[in-house]
Amino acid sequence: MRTDLVTWLDTADPGAVTSAAGPKMGSLAELGRAGFSVPRAFAVTTAAYALHVGTTGLDVLADQVLAGVRDPHRRPELETASARIRKAFEEADVVEPVATPVAECYAELCHRSSRPRVLVAVRSSATGEDSATMSFAGVFDSYLGVSGAGPVVEAVRSCWASLFTERAISYRLEHGLSHRETPMGVGVVELVDARSSGVAFSAHPVTGKRDRMVIEANWGWGEAVVQGLVTPDCVEVDKDDRRVLRHEVATKEFVSAFDDRAGRVVGMPMPERLRSRSVLDGEQIGGVVDAVLEIERHYGHPVDVEWVIDRDRRPGGRVTIVQARPITFRPQSGTVAAWDPVAYAAKYAFGGGADR
Image 1 (cartoon, one colour):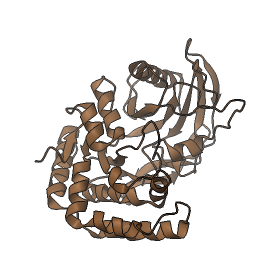
Image 2 (cartoon, rainbow, N blue to C red; image 1 turned 30 degrees about the vertical axis):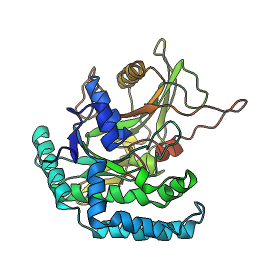
Image 3 (tube, rainbow, N blue to C red; image 1 turned 180 degrees about the vertical axis):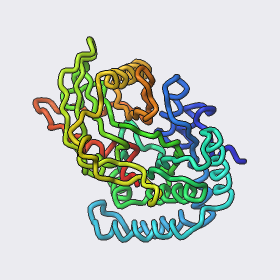
């Protein structure tokens, strides 16, 4: 197996993972090495992407299609170019030197998880996705609840194709970038059986105050929040004494859950008895706070963290971390922006843009 095409996050150097498969996977590798609870995962590297598009000629096709697209705001042109390139990606089989190691790694992931067809999240992780000067967060696609070697390989291909979403093309044009400068890595991450999930900020996301933490929480996986179906619960915590300063419980009419018939994560009506119930109890809030503060100490700066509470977690157990990044928001002088948790989730949280 060519180790330059796929890499396991628990054995590779985090810096090497970032270089080979983007910052999203590099962050997960670093968190795992630092001792945090993270899912099992492997990455399909940008070398695999380059081999695929070079062999199939998709890189040349993309150059040709995009040659006449220069205005990042001409939506009809962007849509036409995106549709043509993405269609070509979906019609080209993943080349065998890539498809085989991806399938073999998925089989190994099933073995490590003691499950014959483990559910995974297949997550886009483009290089430069969260750099100091720009962010492609929310632009690319990820896929939740994929199982089976064939579907995983196809989901990797779909993540590659999302390098050419309308938004991604527009963003690159605005910043003078070529698609060749931001190749796509992909993470294949064991899907945690989520009782609840959310995002937490170790500094207030609106005021920037570092003496308090904000936690957003929803039942199941975060897709219902990203789709705008649900406003999550909001908890504000004093970081010094761990007091809950505010706990707003939203009415949550939908939940993201795995549908056996559809074979993927879908939005479902929330059972009536859970719609107005708090997602997190005091012990679980404490578990999220502990994890986020430890991550902040590890990095040495404020962070926002995507977390998941497994259905099998017991009181005192660790919260699973699926992503952490620096908080980049800073309120402008003299203004206080309104905090919109749904807009934030759609842009940043729960693994990227249109999780499927």
